[in-house]
Amino acid sequence: MKLLVAFVAVLLTLLACDAVWLGLAYKPLYLPAMGHLLSPQVNIGAAAAFYALYAFGLSWLIVLPAKTYGGMIDLSLRAALFGVVAYATYDLTALSVLRDWPLALSLIDMVWGGVITVAAANVACLALKLIRTNR
Image (cartoon, rainbow, N blue to C red; front, side, top):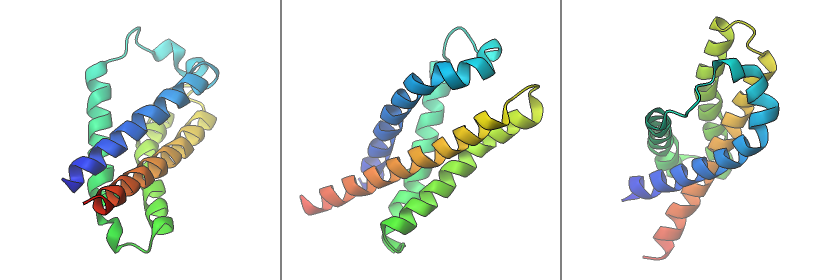
């Protein structure tokens, strides 16, 4: 039950935050750098697989063990590291193999990975605390 609560909270937070982020950053940041590489349609299956896997990984590896951590600051640091490393996998690979991939875009996206992951982890921990207090 705890994993399901954490997973749903993480997933909803990721989707909401990314919807806002992409709404604001897509045209000025991503489109100029990646426009010539973009597919005319989003691959919904691949996107769903990413969000599901990321939400599960964050929930299982960071959120659920949080009770053994030193509090919200420790949770946030662990989540930030998880997010930066995960986003760096994509961004630094793109930087290493794609011609004219902008370093600035990779850095911005890696910071965003840390921020969104901290937000999702904290929302999930709050959801778990609320469920415990309502039993």
